[in-house]
Amino acid sequence: MHTRLLPLLIVLMAAVLLALGVPLAVSLAGAQQQKVVVDRIDDTARFAALAQFVTEPTDPAGGDINERRETLRSELRSYHEVYGIRAGVFYRNDSPMAQAPDDWFLPRAGEVRDAFEEALLSRRSHDPEQVWPWQRHSLVVASPVIRDGDVVAVVVTDSPTGQMRSRILQGWLVIAAGEAAAMLLAVGAALRLTGWVLKPVRILDATTHDIATGRLKSRVAAAGGPPELRRLARSFNEMADNVEDVLEQQRAFVADASHQLRNPLSALLLRIELLALELPEDNEEIASVRAEGKRLAQVLDDLLDLALAEHSEASLQVADVGALAAERVAAWAPTAEAKGVRLTGNCPPTTAWADPVALSSALDAVIDNAVKFTPADETVEVTVTSNGDTSTVVVTDNGPGLTDEELTRVGDRFWRSGRHQNIRGSGLGLSISRALLASGGGSIAYERHEPHGLRVTVTVPRNAPTGESTAQGLTDR
Image (cartoon, rainbow, N blue to C red):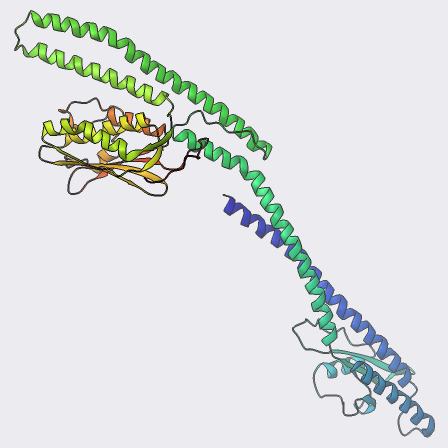
């Protein structure tokens, strides 16, 4: 969520900064050009004032005319030399009154011609189009020279824009630097904001995962964040308390019911045994009743074990998973041998965080199940492996296996495959294993073992769970 929210905030803030920066850059460019245009207008107005009293060359008073013309030419020449701007005063017939440089004349077409034609209409030419830093256009400004209400000539200036474009670019660099600094501040603010908003969400997610994996005592710690998320955290804690109370009541009921039923069931079994003394030894009915009674007693024992497994908290420590698995293989070897099943183990030493008693009990249930359903002369293999995060115990058998539909239900309470109803068991062994493993952060998974059989994988973490000391460390021995 952090990776989705942070880019969204950054994009929004970048859009805001661009929405502010682009108009500012355009305004800066316009202001710089307008300043140049105003200067050119003032210059053309001054030259128009000088040219106003220079008449046609055929004027009889040639001395004054030549003197004024030379003054105008001198001013234009100095203007060109100092500023590098081409300037000239042209009669209506395009002939020059004076110009600088001397080889500059009115072109037949283009911006200069358009500005000259517009000034002949007794008005200053329009402001030129905006020149951007990447364009090498010039600025053309034309003003009419008016005498006795008539336009007798036009002053035209053609200005290079290199300096103006440099000033615009420098201003843009300043704006870009400001935008970059503002963007860095915005990113920092976005990081703080997303951290402030998402910290309660991360804590809530971690706590939810803890509860989902069996650590029902986990609660959302008090943290900052928006008021809505703090209120959500309090509501979540209240919900977790209520759920824990309900589950505790359910477990207590199962445990109490299992315990209370054992006494009358024991008395019933005793009466059956006394009744059996009065009947022939080969009486099938009494044998069936005795078997069903023992099966009911086993179910009650398994229910009590399941209730205790779900209720008790794991005593986690660094345990040698390989040694525990090898010990359980040795313990079940006589049972497997009596059935004609080969039970083998490949259990190299490897460590993990686990409750040794709970892990041993879970392995007992898994190995017992594998030996029970494996026919004679077949093999049950127990293999221990590890990687950087987990250690696994894989139990594979060559029994009948399970269908895809049955694989989705294996491990459910009291569930047994319809093909195995004639084999003793209550259907609670694997449920007990799952509860024992979940209390310590472990898991159990089932899949097919080719060409036939079942593959059960018991996984326990090698990293210390939250709140546990990691000083001991985990290293393969």
